[in-house]
Image (cartoon, rainbow, N blue to C red; front, side, top):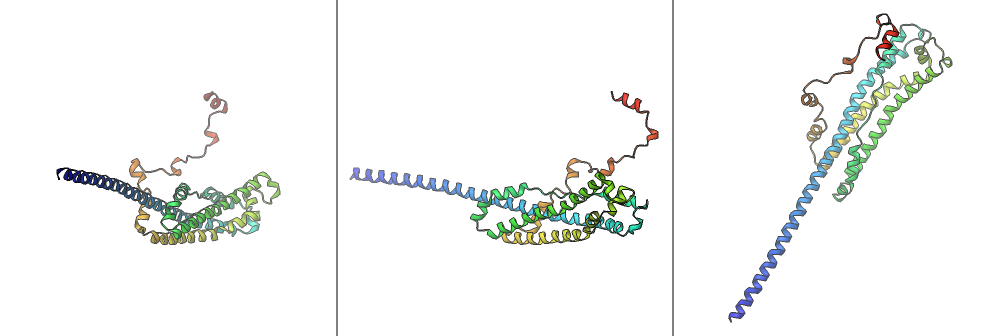
Length: 271
């Protein structure tokens, strides 16, 4: 009877040991799986914030650029209103020079976020967020399209300026300023500023509207996205400890030839 009890206890101990080991393995595996899923969820949420933050930043830039383009449109309207028989007048030159000095700010967006999102596509597919994936892909495509559109007008304008400088005799007018204003291609470019400014203002609204839709799809509050997107807009000066200088702070007066030393003296100074 005693041997029977010993055997029973042995089997009980073995069973308890087996069950304990199995339970420990299951708990360890389950915890690891849970932690992995939590990490994946956090990474997915961070990627979503980066994606929607990037779209918001682009929309904000487009809104800012549209205001800049409206300023340039006003200049263009003044220039196009000059009668053709008055383009050679000296007072036209400062206006065009001022317009050209403004230039057109080039539009560039950070494409690293798009790459990060592309690398995590499988994670999003597994979650069944196909509408979110499609929406983000469409918005990234629109960002590329409008970047090309905006920068294209700068390239076209620079091409016409270069053409006049390279072959001035091919254009009517006494000065390069007049030659540009007589140039029909340059005038057509000036005439496009108004519509481009309107389009860019609408693009800013349109992208924000679609971005809010994306936020609803994955249940992320708009306030969090806006805070994430613009978190560094006003913090740089506080972190650095001094205000950022503007280009005007580096402008110096043009040199007056009468105030310069003799050229031989100046050259010898830098030997």
